[in-house]
Image (cartoon, rainbow over all chains, first blue to last red; front, side, top):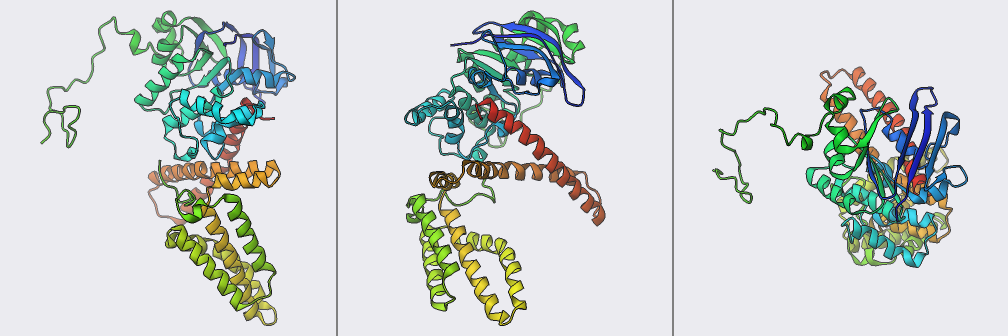
Length: 274
Length: 202
């Protein structure tokens, strides 16, 4: 099950008058994975909040957001939120319950899942993110990567057709990043990912939208868009390393002639431990 | 994965920890009520104290930890108890009030450290305590840890750029850290509310 998104001429300005989104329009088809990139303050997070009707202050907004062809209004807000799952940037904002179980159960409970099916739903959601058996743990005892995966589990438990992710790989170590990316890759839902992790965009997203100063500057096939170096540089980004592979790499600080100094590291074969 | 000062020993495994949470809550509540309504009697106070000490011993919660907790809360008790000193027979009254409240506190400290907080919340929920209050308690418990980390980070950042031991400067900095913390709490509350709405909060 995956849903579609259509945004028509969306404008939004903050209560103090600062414009955040100007005339943003795009469509996303069911099952697509789309990246939203742009410099800091481009309006990425604000745009994502609109996809879930989280900026209810309609006096500051014009235009429309359609989910599965239906315009988001005050009346269908809860139905929309069930279809669109959001993974926020800071896991500590999203994990607001005292235990992992309670947190993953939060969405399904709100949507009125029968209590006898709750346990199984939560076990399934945690299994999907590789955290089976973590139900009793407290959020403040989880590592950063685990927190992020519990956030995702809490959203998956609601079975949304659209997943909206804000900086899903920030503050993760390389392993956490890799695991989270392969997790996302396997999910069939439509995905919208706002991020600075351009390598991930190339790996996951077939199409990308470039946002700057609240406007859509460019949109199109990811590799084509991210390979356009002048465009990327003009908007505070860069051509990701993964797209440089066909060219000679830039010079690097290569001091390989010096030996490695390792004290006790033996498993991966640092040879000169002394 | 660090052990916080704020953490309780609620997750230990002992005969006391294994009792159902509701039983412990009722027992604790009964003890507190008994202490408050009974006429002052040395025998009763001693008996309650003895029982509490036995429970504490069985629970295997470190004694030092329990004493620290008690000492931490004691100023509030003594602060109120001191007022009784100004009444006639103040000395005796002071002793009675202080003993009573200390025993009550000890009961609650024991309860909190032999029961996981989430289980206590469950009991409250089942006892039909208004859900708004339970939710508020749950959120408070959850974000105490986040706030503590945040203030520790801010203090570290401040200390790393402090090159003077000037007391006025320190006060000024502490005040601005507190102010910042307050502002950040407000912003975080907005984000938490958005995250709650995103998952269907009504």
